[in-house]
Amino acid sequence: MEKFVIHGGKPLHGTVQISGAKNAAVALVAATILCDEPCVLENVPEISDITKCMKILREMGAEVRLLDKNTIYFDTKGIEKPEVPYELARTMRASCYFLGTLLGRFHEAFVPMPGGCDLGDRPIDQHLKAFKALGASDEIVNGANHVTADELVGNQIYFDFVTVGATMNAIFAAVKAKGLTIIENAAKEPHIVDLANFLNSMGADIRGAGTDVIKIRGVDYLKGVTYATIPDQIEAGTYMVAAAATKGDVVIANVIPKHLESITAKLRKVGVNVEESDESVHVWVDGSLMKTSIKTMPHPGFPTDMQPQFSTLLTLAEGTSIVTDDIFDNRFRYVAELRRMGADISVDGKVAVIQGVGKLKGAPVVATDLRAGAAMVIAGLAAEGTTEIDNIFYIERGYEKIDEKLRGLGADIQRVYKPDANEMELSG
Image (cartoon, rainbow, N blue to C red; front, side, top):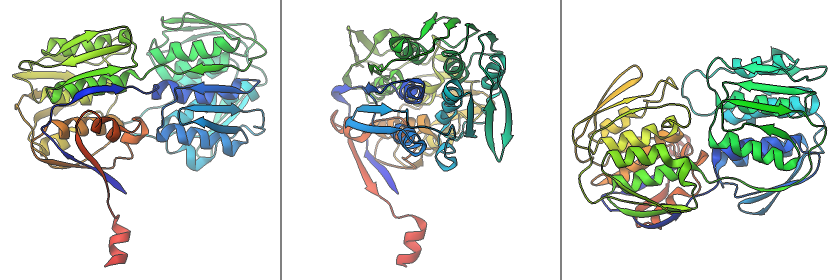
């Protein structure tokens, strides 16, 4: 086991390069199953979720090769059985994307129930609703979803609420279905657009991605391409908040500023300076931080994946801030860890009331999920004294070399090996 040890209180300075988007890349990797020829993905983040996706494909029979640390070659024609290995699927949420891609290619998919961060109940009923509309049936067999179809035929799909995962799975299943599929109340996130662009570059016919109505006309063949993943808006937002929390001066490079508009707007509201360029944003603080209210919303609203990081920033602001996040049940689990560091936060259901305390103090804390882990890192960077963060495997699900990037900005953060309980018992 490993942990991060941070000696905080140092403003971040310099330039940081943002990696490819986690939420896009896991879908693009799954999408290679639909490609009838080899393809290459560039700007793929070097994170554990991608490593697991690659391992899933290899165990299913695909040829997957690293051309360099962020460029991957895929040839999935060797996959013969549409079944995802149980132990790998249960460790990550994105394994559910293999339902749509395997169904789209083989008209059958056998995928164990997905795992990942514990953010409460995240059912896949809307995914299954989309598959059923296209002609598939489903059942649970030995804890796995088994979805089958004699053929897939385009149809109208309406989601009861906006859902990124189900929108992507509907696209996967529809891209080779017969006829026209219309998805209504579709998610509009940048990674939805990136997925559509990737598939369209192969020869798919997808229109309307980025709006709430997506139209897909099925095709028979998808050719091989080389495609670069978009930059990660959440990683970029995390470094923007880290710069603000430490009252630093940082250029966040390799970004699409339009994808960051909701984050930029809130940072400016609390008194942070943000200057946009073509492919970068410059963030610095030269005054006090002020209170604000936040409500997470589907894109283009404020993203739930940035709520823990921004809430950490608000503990350092003047006055009382209100944060509402009703997208995931367990999104406020990190609050108990921030309290260890001196934060004054009360939670009632989906609402957190944050009384600014001006400063945090270092303490031993735990990453309870991916974005909570990022929040702990930000808190440690801003705090006086030393912060130790356990369960950093959560952080590494979505952030490429976060400790190295932060050291490049002047942070005092080290990765330290920590013996687990069994090793300690044996050594005793």
